[in-house]
Length: 115
Image (tube, rainbow, N blue to C red; front, top):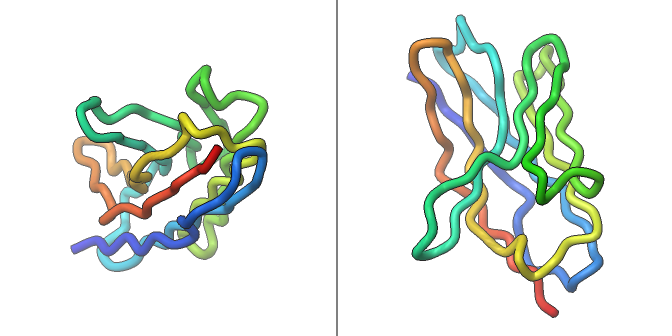
């Protein structure tokens, strides 16, 4: 089994910053890309950012220039540095670990951005 432990969510004012972390452990052989999804009530889950084991990153248009994803392969940990946060960034953020034919989501960490 794979365990994904997320941390770093919280309440922040608009314009502020947060850093999310997600550490993968357990049966993680075959782990390829890692990333973050987010979801708000009534909306479908959306990709925020993803990064391959080689360091290639992709971002949703809505966060480009504000969020940065990074990864420590030695620690099997992915980070999401979120700057200039906006109220519309308020969501449950889920870590995603891609194993090629399958993926696993973490339990989620809540980010609330107040205006």
